[in-house]
Image (tube, rainbow, N blue to C red; front, side, top):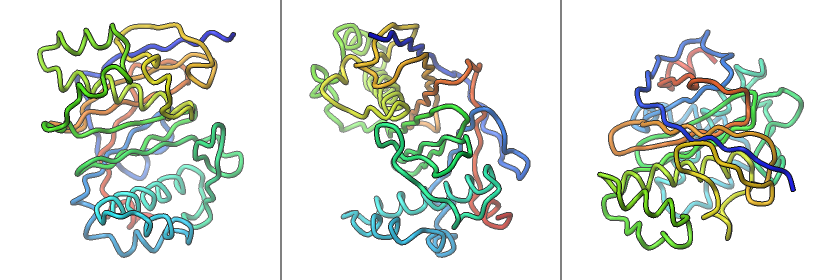
Length: 252
């Protein structure tokens, strides 16, 4: 059975750079977008969506979920168009390994998205990548998912942390980012997905992929924690950008 190495770490001091038209090309980039900055650009962004994306958006029951999905997918199209030197409407998305969304063709670029509350996240890189963002909900009964989702060591870590709720969300986002990167998704083995800081050995059956993986925690804003996972060459940190939707649209 293939061995899999997973290293979990944290980026304590994230520098969020302003995005510019020459910012494309880093090995791994994470873009954050505040939903309030997107609202003035809703009409041109929605016009970028393909018919199947519009259909999917309309199936959301809650308007705020539809809004987050539509904005994230439109901004993803704009960004990937710059990476691939295509027009946003020319991009085609397919189900890749383990049915993880991927670009059709051989561009070499991988992506993943997440959204929660007031923030959207897009990760793009050459390696397989997954990203997860969570609002640290003060009312969520996180102890209810302990036994199903965390190992005994992870439970002890959360319980002993100065801020148990934040510790829960940090480990949760690491697990989510990792299974999104591999395409494994959440299943009965979610408690076996490594999330504690350090290097862990597991197997292909648990993770859904072989090779070596890096998982990096970071803060998007107060009360918003996130993680990005990838299987590329180790990097100290990804490049982090705050995306201005208007600037991106005007330079499309």
